[in-house]
Length: 135
Image (tube, rainbow, N blue to C red; front, side):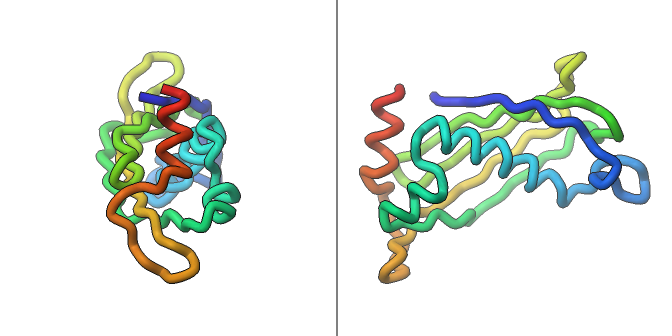
């Protein structure tokens, strides 16, 4: 399956009062990787809208394995796990130096026809054709 990796460095503004990255910031890290992956596919949010579909997140699962601390560099790997009945992306956050797994996550997006608001069971060809061409 298709995947990408991005490097992120934890900043002071990412931290909570316990001096680890606040759990809510992980969604932002996943979004950064997801946007890079969608760009690689050639079906980013602008292209989604132009094709007539919105792709809201309908499910988000996060497993926090180890805390991320200030200044720590980590890699977010995003991999397409499923795309024919919605878009499921798996994420793995690892420490840049040690390779230790820090977090595992998964998002699921469902295609919605913008004009009608209809939820689609199957992914439109606008997505599936692009992924199949790259596979």
